Length: 65
Image (cartoon, rainbow, N blue to C red):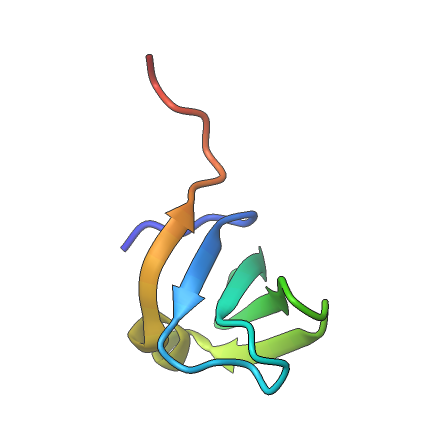
């Protein structure tokens, strides 16, 4: 799974605010996710974050034309 900073992903579980989309703001041993609904930041271990990603909505990289 290729995920970069700035990628918006849909998670399996919703945030308490009701939104299930998050923007990746940091990648390393932990992922820092920012909720697109309320703007809260969530830190998750890499293994559990990759496991709970349901779908990649937008990619941060430029499309090759």
